[in-house]
Image 1 (cartoon, rainbow, N blue to C red):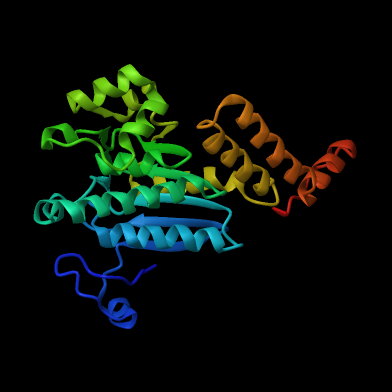
Image 2 (cartoon, rainbow, N blue to C red):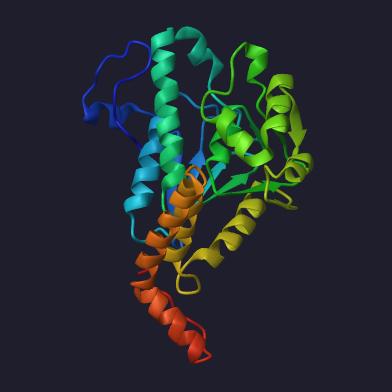
Length: 286
């Protein structure tokens, strides 16, 4: 998955063909059994540059439009890192205006991930710190490989705040007081502690990254058709992600509108019929 645009540094515009031929693939995109897998791939720590974030953005849009994709899994390449956040060398060289636009685009990208009406699972195969945790928090479910890394938002040590949604998503997960404490201290935690805080949903024991990813894909498989009504899953996500930011009465109105869409769907008809007929529903995601 490669997205052509202006390059960082000289910001010299290239033709799309030139960029596609020269730009390294930093986000691998593959589809297995209706599950799109995004792999952040920039060793050794999978830190993200503007190029990587653009490619992630393109992968999100691609998966949105792909009717064969019903679930998205995002993970990191290698055994040690999911993602260690933004590339510090890149930020040190850039001017403040460019860094502002970089953060703006990164925010827009993670908002697209969060609002995509397909379930997103972050498979945390290793250290997930700084912007890496910010990416993970934009997913719907976070599953970690036991004892493989730490999580945290230590940006205060650089004299900055977590600027890719970290201050806002963390408080919505752990609460105001703990979020301030974690970010002001710049603390990092093992996955067990992150699970206690509610940052991580599940922890899997596995020998290596490949076996861990296989476990995550097996879990993700339950959210595919024909066993699951994927349209209902997608609208449950949208109702929660959007509704949680609205006044309660407006959130209820949103819920009713999304429910009306589902009542008119083929899957709702199938689900109700299967229940009455005492058989297993065969959903189509429609």
